[in-house]
Amino acid sequence: MATECVAYRDSKGGLHGSPEKATLEDLAGVLGRVGDEGGMTAGVAKLIFEKRSEIERVFLEHDSMVVRKTIECATEFAAAAE
Image (cartoon, rainbow, N blue to C red; front, side, top):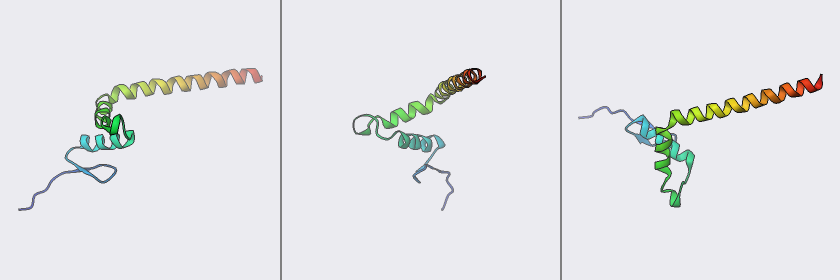
């Protein structure tokens, strides 16, 4: 008898049993080969997935610093032009 199943497709078209597994495969693809013969890629992708909120926080802080510096430079440039 036929049964229904839910699968999640990664960006290369591979099917996975969970969204996490599909996402991990996509992350591994983005990372490329990590370590000798690419043996560390899956582990690094899993670590990124697990630490996502912390990684996003770090990038948000970085972006905030870059924006703040850009505003400071623009303000200094405008003041010097007066």
